[in-house]
Image 1 (cartoon, one colour):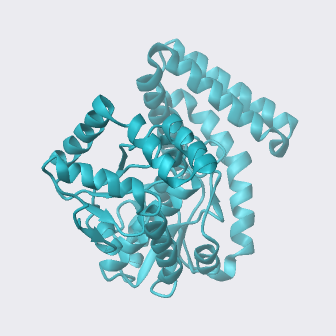
Image 2 (cartoon, helix red, strand yellow):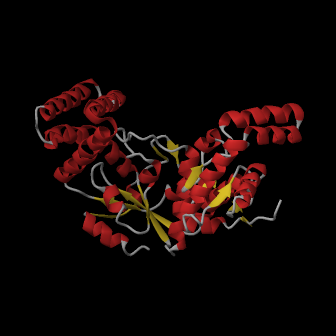
Image 3 (spheres, one colour):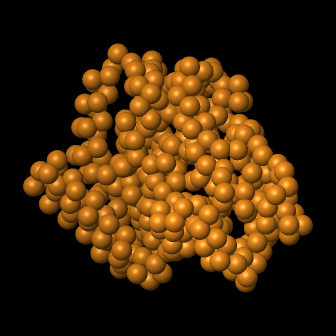
Length: 364
């Protein structure tokens, strides 16, 4: 085989958001990959399974022979065509398999023989993944964190997205960070979350920021947990509290949990979307029933069903204002106020969105 280009310049891949071809089998890709990676496998799951059995029973030579038999002829040409098409669309793309071994070498060679060239990642997925996890740990020595807090509905995420040196954990985790925070699309795998978080950290720190701002999330966002060393770095960080009038909080809550959520459900499920959204809200309320207590759960359910009936009769989203206000006052506020009281010694600033924005502008 010809000597074809290799690279372990993982930092450049992150900073340039380089597109990647992942030639591992779909089952491997689904467990975790990298931002910008497309799964264009050398072998399907079944083909990989058969080759694995052959390897165990008869060794590497026979396994390779079977692999070439399974991925030959028209099958081989179709896979080369898929790689070529991706390279045509992304000339800067790079290629990897699990350890940078046989699969990526074969794919790279076939691409070369077809008249194109692509750089292969030295050490493959495993080496790049190790780099990202090491950089996440090292990052804690390079920045001082600030935590943006505030009651539910205060607009923390909205403000966070305006701040250049902020890391949007909820966005990376695809979750709103609350009992009603589930989205239609599932959260990423733990590996994908960690990889995307590492990308964000590396990219922000490359801009020279000495302070990074995070929303007050705790150890987890939905079912995903922050890396231990990063969480320990964030845990005692100074708290900046966003204070928002209750009426505005209700508007933000209705916009997020009702208006935006319904639009997503209706886009995904057409005419069934509204009912499916309502079922998920009911399920979310059921999950907090014990914490609410029987009487408050009954009341919040009544307010919701009343608003839902009004909406179906033609009312605007404001029909949910009373439900949102009750949910904030009786469920979210007591929990958040308790946590803030426990951490009052960490609070360094409180104020409106404009005041918080100005305060944080000092810390870059």
